Length: 105
Image (cartoon, rainbow, N blue to C red; front, top):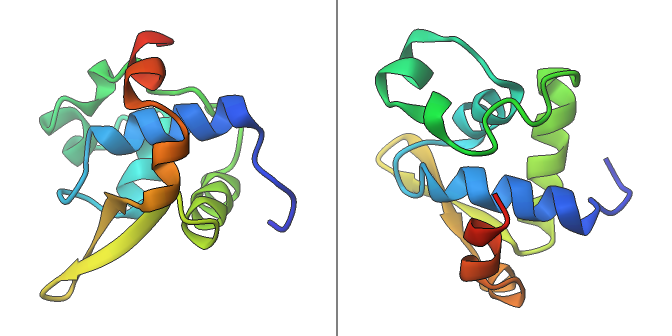
């Protein structure tokens, strides 16, 4: 995905990422946004995230492309804990206030 992710979708992705910062990677983030009923998503209570299922009509790969765009443009980053990649907020995420992101969902 080369085109810009719209601001509303950036907020949605950041809101979901907030649920798994340093606990999960981009695939788990994509599964939250897709509305997956996978065991791990449900065990972690991620189905209660306000933006759970926001991209339910999109393919998982398309959602991952949006997340990758967010990494490329410094909204999110991937940090490794051992061999496990974990999502973290990047400096660019500060361009959008976390309070505004939380309050809008």
